[in-house]
Amino acid sequence: MLSIFRFGDKSVEPSIDFILNFLNLALGIDPSQLIYLAPYELGIRNTVLSKKVPERNVISWENNIPLRLGKNKPQGYYLKIFLPYKHGIIPISTIGFIEGINGISTDSALFLERLSFVKDNLIHWYESEFFIDLTKEVKAQFPKFNYNEVYLWANHLRTLMALYYDGVRPEGKGPGHTMRKIIRTLSGTLSGDKVCDDKALKLISAGIKSLKNLGYDITETVDVNELTEQIFRQINNGSSQIAREIKRFKRALSNNEIKSSKDLKQWNEERGLTYEWMRKASEDEGVYDLPFPEIEKRFWLRNECYSFDTNQKITDPVQFLKNAESKRMKGVMKN
Image 1: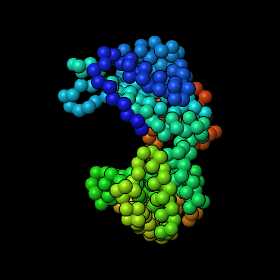
Image 2: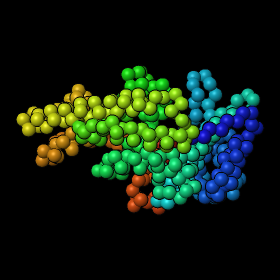
Image 3: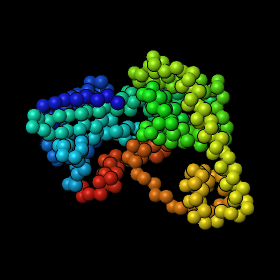
Image 4: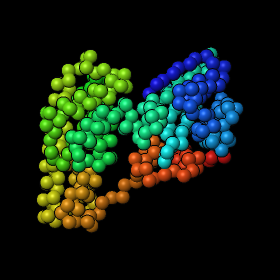
């Protein structure tokens, strides 16, 4: 992500012009091709419309969720920009505006990984230069993985490496908790197997290349062998621990000890087994009628607007975003 800051502007127009000009000059994207989530405040909606953008492509709402910096600090507003692309929609930029006594301050974000794969006319950002080395290596080392598991590993392993580079360790608090959750997610894909040292080093080396393309040379401050050992020791230990719990779960299942949703909840909370893992384990044993709870799937726009499955085509991008905003805002759409 590239962040651009401006201070003391008299209006929102200079920042909007900068982003739209960049997209046009660098990628040949005309402002009229884009879809905008634009609030009325600060003249944001009217400024976008003045750029010869079709009115249908500008979505605004009455009930707004402001940009908040903290208690007793000024509030602001977001302009979000989307590009209809292939079978979906890509969020490509967010601009935050805050009005103060010295004018309007702006924090503009351009999502470079997404823009890169658009520029190269690729199907997905995991094929872009910021991921491709790691994506290919994950496919090579785990040939039985489906595309979701491949992309999960490419994304999560690169994130772990970046966190490690920033000084985060699994045993720490705060970001360390996030790191542990990521590690456990990766462990859960291994079905009790372990990643050998040779495979681990190849994966880390590919991750280093991907991060270098993103502007991070982690080898300047990180010992690669130590990084590899620490990350994959945790992943392998997690894989073994999950496999042991799955084995115990299957034994309890065969002994008819798991019957109710309360039993399943207990295994989830006390043993750390996800409902997805337990469902798969029970089906492996030929049991298909356990009362798993209905878990409402959270709506994440970034996951829904551009699917890994190219057959999931969004035929009306504007209406899709209106529906998505209705879910997020739970307010009254103005147009």
